Image (cartoon, rainbow, N blue to C red; front, side, top):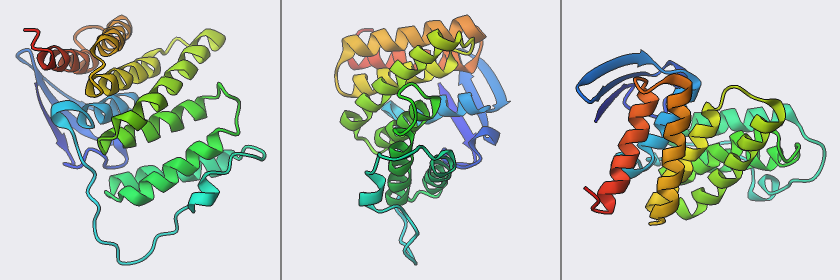
Length: 228
């Protein structure tokens, strides 16, 4: 599979307007990514053969980022605006390749999200955000439990609300499967990747780029095991 993107930085914001060209199985697919597709792509570029290290450019001034002490606070009433602001700033920093700032803001967003209900969608979003960041920097040991927690929340929400959109669950499955693969936990990796593909095929069909992404990562997994 050959994947081309514009702009060249896959963390470019706004992600949901990024344009991709997929070439897989002799087919060419060109489309504007929606938010869900973008998160699938972030998982793709952050792992395996498309592994990406976030560059850290020289800083000309100290950015206003959360302190480690403040980021670790989890008590008090939940503040939706603070959560959203920290998350937005974290994603913006990722788009600019500013790893230290991105980490601080995403961690602060997660700390704020911990104040919501344990099954709140915002907690799942922040867990996935930070997990994607960890995976993008090669820290799959830290990424794996974050994705695992996010998946548990997504599943609980689907049961509680009867959410017909299971693609967010598939995102977590794909991310967790890739983290397990990079940690050489091949059995769990295959389980999660196959489940992600099943969800994607059920929701959007086998001709959708989501399916191509799932198959790509399954192929990587089998190649790593020399299972040709």
